[in-house]
Amino acid sequence: MHIHGGGGADTMDATPDALRTICRTHARHGTTCLLLTTMTQSRDAITAALAGARMAFEGGPGFCADGARVLGIHLEGPYLSPKKPGAQPAEWIRDYDPGEFGGWLETSGGAMKLLTMAPEQPGGGALIAAARENGIVVSLGHTDATAEPTRTALEAGATHGTHLFNQMRPFHHRNDSVVNVLLFDARARVELICDGHHLAPEVARLVLQAKGDRGVILITDAMAGADAGDGEYRLGGLRVRVENGRATLDDGTLAGSVLTLDRAAANVRAWTGADWPTLARLVSTNAADQMGWPHKGRIQVGTDADFVFVDDELRVHATFVEGRCVYRSGRPLSG
Ligand SMILES: [Zn+2]
Image (cartoon, rainbow, N blue to C red; front, side):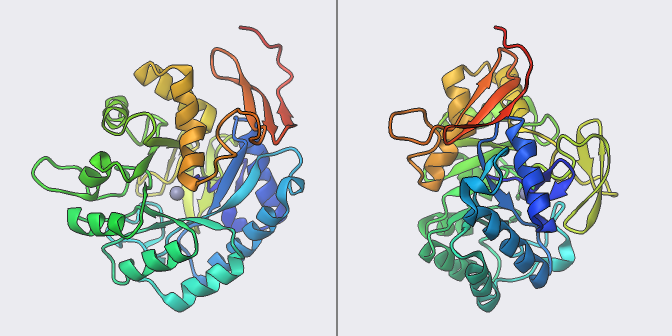
């Protein structure tokens, strides 16, 4: 649901080569399909990214025969809270502009499936309405919302929380924040980045208890450095340093992750003791249900044959997308 890049490539690069690199990188780690995720940037840069991602989306399974399938676009920003930019460049965060958003819907040609926005910002209500009219799942994120605008957004059809806790008005026992509402309102599912840097293990346990194992979606929020080693990368025009599995801006702000979905599942299993059916829901079924895709996220007669072979350590041995093997590790399968 939330992948900016991997293997050295970024969605904002917008070239077929870059997007295929992202698809291949994440297929090696058990992702069968994904939403290419944009960054807060200039209108032109986002337009270019949407055009590139649309081409990948419309290419269907043929776009990348040895990678994950692109099932659409996650527009993260630019209509966010300037108080919660995280690694989204603050100078490009802006209020909802119907003309700009309408242009992007046109450029996307139906590929835009998920939107992260801050509901308390000017025009937030109109933006939720425009997105819902176009069948886009609305997620609250990079937001300083208190309880009231959060509840209003859920009434208006928002159903999702982008990387819960990270870049949100924090949970507080005397003060209702967006986190307080998302944690306990059954209308919303929430994303978690379980890389060991964004959340403490006990917080992941708390969220699973509060939301249940159908209300949580493990994401990566991966940037270009995922599966590409330590070094310097760019994310939305900013310099990011990756060191020991931690991606940060120059000022130390976490800048996405280098997490892959196989490691996310392994971490959550280690932190919570989750069993196989629960892990499968957290990395696939819940995301498919959230997007309204009953043919995805489950192994059943009549659904797409998307599945992954893993061993007991959750290392990926093979990845199948719609019945085609797109990745095989070549390691002997044991256990
Ligand atoms: Zn992101």
